[in-house]
Length: 468
Image (cartoon, rainbow, N blue to C red; front, top):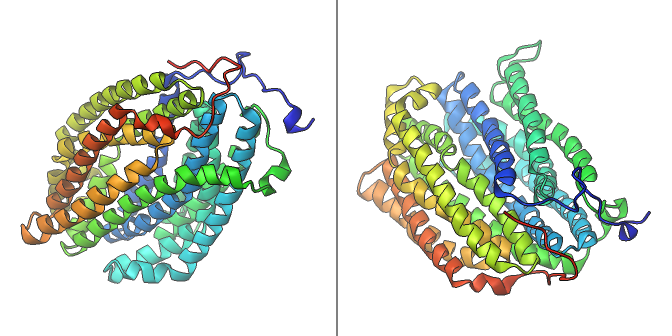
């Protein structure tokens, strides 16, 4: 039967679609992001057994890889928001077509980026003022992981589509499997166990690529099990200008904002290279620990964006409006708890990664500033995700240009080089940006200007999907 003739399939409970409860959406997203972070933490922890320089090199390479992944999210994020609004308005066939389009477009972009890393990775890393052993580790890691970044392109699209259909638990299970494969691969290829060669940083890179290849196969299997209207093979080759326009309307501003943020982080990394190897290593370890603070906010932000997208598509903006304030309160409480834990155990946590007392001291000092940085970042994560999901993606981009590029980068230079504040200056510059944007984004959401940016007209012929 043709997809256009299919009726929406029911889920296991016999309902059309999935009811949206924030808690049930969020806890699998939380675990999925946690597992994704573990891939980076596993690399850092295992490579720290080789040397701090290996960690610094891989951390520098990851700055570029993060930007590449954010570029790939132009399509993944844009498609997920458009799909969410179509699901909210009960237009399942359109949601299916856009899902196929997202996978194809992201693969094309991913292949182009992979080719760029293979051809120009060395020059890109040299521009960061990296030298000696750190540069060599970074080049070998970027060549392999960057060359295979097109695999992450496909994963981004598939995972986003599966989550926005309400199947966050299934996406989490795939991430769990991917991490298990990655950690086993690290153990075998970094240290030379199970009869494998001892490859160090190159081994971590190969393990990362192999685990992603396996994950893609499983993600496709899940996708075809959960969609209300299944994708036909020909839809992967059908490029609709109207759908592409809607995807890019959300995706381009969202990704540009994130690319701008990561570019500022690269500038701060550049500042850190002038502070010495100990500061470079401390920055990387402290950043890894900090990820666990805003993990809850990311999960709640993603779950909230799914609900906001559905409710906007269903013509229920009031539900979306109230949901965001509740989510911001919940995320702020979770962040404060995590900040208290991290500050209390900051030195033992740093000691997990290194025995160098200077690196531990520097990292522990900047972790004290988490109370200033992470509270602002949490509010940003929740409200910016909600604005994108409503269709109002350009506003965070314009504000970010002012606060990130125009304020935080110059502030970082002032704090680090003129006031000799070291790594603490970098942390405070980032915190200044996060708090100013948090205030502006809160005012934007309160103004309800985002309501006029909906991408899909709601179909009022059927009841909207309930949200709690």
